[in-house]
Length: 263
Image (tube, rainbow, N blue to C red; front, side, top):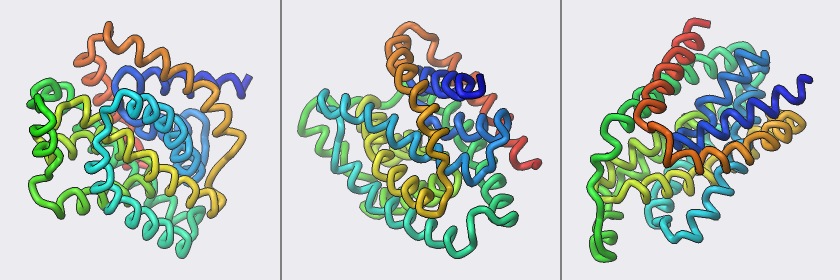
């Protein structure tokens, strides 16, 4: 029965990710900690690989649709991957299972959820207003950031945050991309966000696995539920009231963030 509960949790998160585009980490990690009593370091490590595998499937579909701007992905990855490796090195030195590091993880996770809640609400209110590029020439200009260093800097911040908390590659990543690439169409912003999250969460997740911070049987159960959930969620997306769902989700994420900070 407990196994089916994990599968159902994965299914639920999969549907929400498919409906809203918000990364699974902002939902799955609090669910594992609050509802299943999983230790924070295990919840974060397991969820990173959960995100890597689920977003890999999404990236394959986006590649076939030819909507991934790899230049944007490379610029963000240039900051996020080194930051993830440095964060993993720091976790190895401190020991992820120690009380001090777990307290740091839950507090950082709480603030990351509050940021995600704000980013989700921002997308609900302003997401549709993003200007759209209309030609290949416009797209070349649209993939040029306001300054070359900004994608690397923000990529590094997100890379460290994701490695420490498993949260940040979804709603925060999309919001950052909207600010850095204001002329890029929203569809391509979401595609770039999903694509760059794959190597980031894979590197961070495998790093956590090397530290013993991944529950492999739990990961398998979550994926059994999430993969069909994402498939259903993406098909319901056209019919669902997106603004209402994102607004409700931002409230739930803010509540979870406050609870984690208060632990």
